[in-house]
Length: 135
Image 1 (spheres, rainbow, N blue to C red):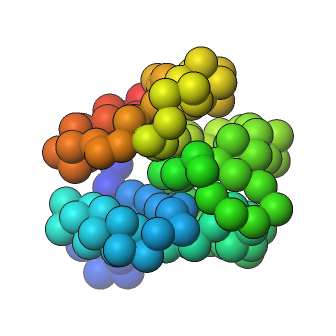
Image 2 (image 1 turned 135 degrees about the vertical axis):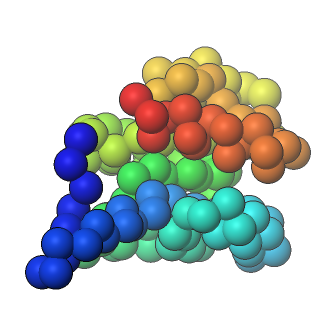
């Protein structure tokens, strides 16, 4: 594979993958976002599905959507995942929840789901993201 080059013929480093973290609980969102940034990812944060859809409609580059299932607003994480499947089918989705009932439905909407149960291990999340990006 050829690397991108600038006008001087020097290799230009590839930009890091972009993860859209969708979580209504600010503390949870900020902790996972900070962890993922520390892993070398660019992170965009959204407080709910409506905000996430606005980000995606703005044509901002996103490689993976990582969303909580249970959120207030006009749609939950399942609704967001369904929107992504319909409107951005190339975009990968990872869902997380503390509720066990969500596993089967999440398996139909996620790449390698069923779901990341809360509390999840940040290192396992990072590995899962890297596996999805490598596909």
